Length: 279
Ligand code: 13P
Image 1 (cartoon, protein in one colour):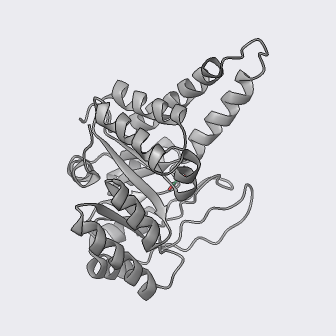
Image 2 (image 1 turned 60 degrees about the vertical axis):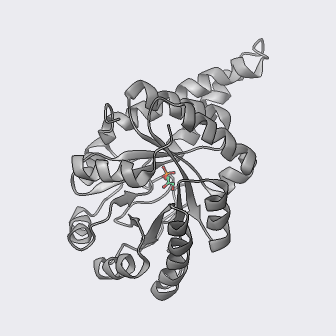
């Protein structure tokens, strides 16, 4: 069933767990995610980045996600991840997404506020909720050093007040993709942000962070955690293995282990996020 993440994250915030937001770009990934949610009796956020929805086929893929969500036995919200422009967010809102993220984090604060507010105004007029980002969660190439621009709590407070955004993605040492060395989350900073921002907080870059750190982040106010890279790795690694048996030629036989691998990663994340049996 489709349920807005406004409701899902409010519940998560009250009961101190996080809802997993899992990226998808095709049928097998979607099936694996939804099945995991159903087996764990967990709410789920299915999300697509701009690249992922383009790969899937825009409206055609959105309709597929919507069918999965409507028929699922658990609450599912469909989210646009990292919308980069007002136009992309408008397309998602008009198409039927339940929530959108507008990512103005590369802009200077005033411009980020202006862009985010324009999306919030349009989204709220259509009953769609919005995630904004402040501080920059970078996407380094494997092994590359990157500068992490952490969220400034004062700016976060102003951003939330002036944009009216529903959820806030924070930069506390998290990165997208592969971490160089151990991830070092700044829990002190997360506490400071939490003190001045009352809306649900979002952690991007959920792959590669230890279960212990995730649990601590959740206990300090993170209500939504985005996971993509671990799903992509499970997909490609399993597909390579699956293709080794040259006698297997039916695409759905080749893809079955891939779907199972996705399901396994998602179930593991749900267990760590604490969202099992929370429907
Ligand atoms: P990872 O790819 O690091 O899991 O991050 C996913 C994400 O934050 C999507 O917005």
